[in-house]
Image (cartoon, rainbow, N blue to C red; front, top):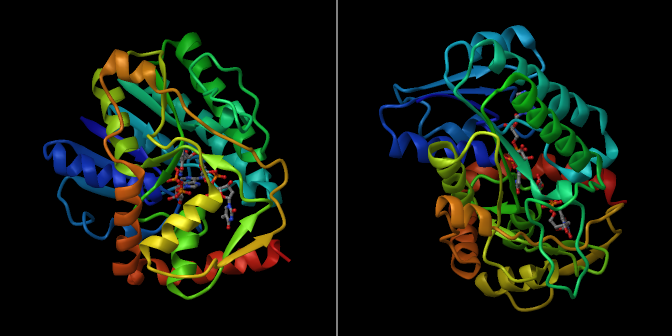
Amino acid sequence: MNLLVTGGAGFIGNNFIRYWLNKYPKDKILNFDKLTYAGHISSTRDFSQNNNYEFIKGDVCDAKAVDEAVKKTDTIVHFAAESHVDRSILDPLVFVHTNVMGTQVLLEAAVKYKINRFHHVSTDEVFGELKLGTNKKFNETTQYDPKSPYSASKAASDHLVRAYGKTYSLPITISNCSNNYGPFQDPEKFIPRAVTNLIDGKSVPIYGDGKYTRDWLYVEDHVRAIETILTKGKAGETYLIGGLTEDINNLEVVRMILKILNINGSYIKYVKDRAAHDRRYAVDWRKIHSKLKWKPMYGFDTWLEKTVEWYKNNEWWWRPLKKKAEVFYRNTEK
Ligand code: NAD
Ligand code: TDX
């Protein structure tokens, strides 16, 4: 395959490229990334010299640059997005630009160059929230009900992708995945923020009552699911991807990290809640399991521990990013 990966300098994109180049050494990957505050060329260091890898700095909203990139490839995996909910509350416009308009620009080029597969990487947040204390889960028939500008922009992009599939017969697939954790996740996000704060002996800011619940998935499981959809999935289909956690809330996640780091004491600081904070996410991944035989491999206990180890051993990567993330929070958590 000749893959165009958008957003490959971000968290999930760089994990995807590393995995793919190792497993498919004959395939070529073109990483197209704007290098926003969330894109880190340092995350691509270990594969940047691979002969089958090329990097182009570009904006998915720039039709000319996108055209040039798409015409060299046959398969698109679209990760590029503004991805942080807190930032979307402060500055929604860039989310509409990149996530909605950028996706449309990419879809146009995909139709023009008759791309074999356009895979759109989306989120379970498009479905809104579930109540605590129920065992309801999101599935492929759940109605969209996004609550943040981030999830609304991702929902809009999902609709556009489906519309291009139907109107122009573009062979699209969509995945809606739950919360990822693992190496190379920017310390602005909850788990790496908690781990790096605790490494520095600082408390972890907890929004609201801390009983918000996420469905945690190790990033390589997400990457394997996208691989499965690209190789075995059916054009036009949507697949939900989720993990093995059963309703672990944010306070419990911090307690687990404290235990892994062998720290006594609570180290929790309650801060103002996020506006329209989604209470609970849980994903029913039975469709991708029954149709394509994918299931998550990595349990939360073990892989959270490995993730913490990774942050302990890779300060060179996160230390420069940590300062920037905390400047953002200093302005929002006043
Ligand atoms: P990230 O914020 O770490 O990375 C996003 C990447 O996109 C960065 O490298 C950034 O430079 C690039 N980018 C942003 N705007 C761009 C533009 N206009 N043109 C080109 N490149 C641009 O995000 P992530 O956590 O790796 O998420 C990747 C995708 O997966 C997103 O679409 C996100 O919605 C989705 N997703 C993420 C999670 C999660 O838990 N992180 C879960 C489900 C779905
Ligand atoms: O300092 C914090 N304290 C805190 O209590 C931060 C940064 C977060 N939180 C809470 C908010 C959420 O309940 O932790 C939970 C996780 O927060 P984030 O890491 O910001 O993730 P979330 O908002 O759930 O969205 C993530 O998962 C789905 C990704 O950022 C999205 O891109 C993805 O679509």
